[in-house]
Image (cartoon, rainbow, N blue to C red; front, side, top):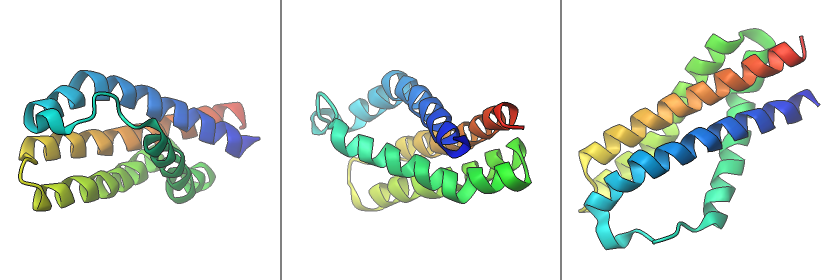
Length: 133
C-alpha cells in the first residue's frame, strides 16, 4: 500500500503542477518559436505513457531509496538530478538538431523539469513518511 500511495501522490503532484506550467508558460513560449508546428491539442496517449513511466522511474531511482534512507531532502536533490538529466536530454538534443529550437526554451524547460521532479519526489516522500511512519 505504501508504494501505491507513493506512486499516486507523486503522479498527482507531478501532473497537477506540470499541467499548470504547460498551459501558462510552456505552451506560449513554444508557440512563439514553433508556431504552426505544434498540435492544437496534444496527443494524450504518448504523453500519458511518458508520465506513467517517468513517475515509475522517479520512484525506483529516487523516492524509494530516499524513503528508506534519507527523507525529503534526499528525494528533492535526487529528483532534481534525475529531472535535469531527463529534461536536459530532451532539450539539448532538440537544441542541437532543430533549427527553430531556442535557448530560452531550453533554459525554461530544463529549469522547470529539474524543480518539478525534485519537488514531486520530495512531497511524495514527505506525504508517505507521514502516512506510514
